[in-house]
Length: 126
Length: 266
Picture 1 (cartoon, each protein chain N blue to C red):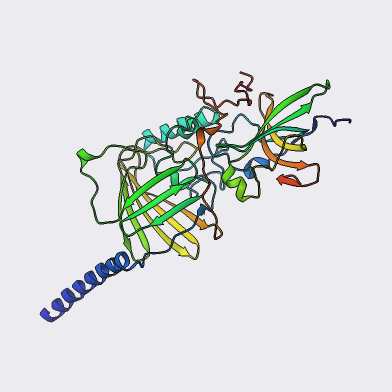
Picture 2 (cartoon, chains in turn red, cyan; picture 1 turned 180 degrees about the vertical axis):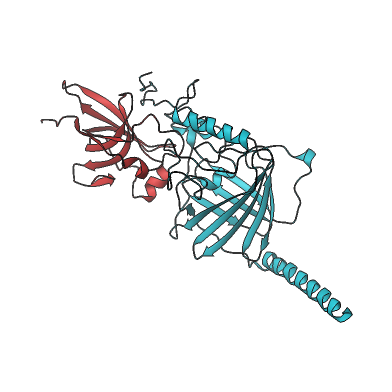
């Protein structure tokens, strides 16, 4: 199977920051909320935990090497009320995850939205 | 003239009795308001929406600030905190998952909150934290000065004025932040909170904050809470369960991978 390039787009969206789901427990300064990236990959693990959920995905870099990215999301209580469930992502799921990247280029992002292989979406993924 | 004075005295006595009767009836007959269910604040976590700049600003966005009536010294403290926020080094105590949010910040958290009305006590329980606060409404006074000390939720006593809960909170720890922009108060803070269901399923809390050390006048703040749909349940929040954002010695919030390795390019 041919994998799509890991980063579909890196688009400046200055308005994103104000409408991101609130991060309850720490500063989010490490993420550049004026930027978005789309990561295409396969879910390795979904951590439905406090204080934040994490989606671990393997994505292929431009050299064709798989790299694991950590996607930080909201808090289970509010996500549950927004329709998320502990099995919203499962290992092996093919996903496109949209997030705000780390300012320093680290392999992590702040979750904005996701689109699964069946076309369903979570968060903000227009 | 004597007749008028007598009427006035009887009127005053009657009003006093009526007020007392109302409170007694409320406490004894179960006529206290029904604030059951789970509530959630209707705004973002900027504590003072009335003075925030830019208007509608988010507490997580660098450059957002409020304008409490600080004196010069405490304005400088706030500005120093704003600088730490801008550098990503603001020492938000709850980031460490170790201490309570405290009062009034626990009234300014984005997740579920319960208001438990009992005749002798009023309990505030938040998902985030979690935090628990007790307000004694059984008529007791504050503990004597030698019997109290600064704590995260302080000491609160109050009473009901018809459908309005009024309580005073003292003995709060200094420098507890009220939101992530870095608003803080001193140990001299004295907060009178008035809570009332201003319309169906919408409670408003009005905080009148006096702080002889930090403020030049009473600071008035209002926060509203909407009742979530019937059947909504409170969900556990255990901050230390999987905290992948520890704070380093320089006050920076780090990001860890699932093995605990630092992802930041330090």
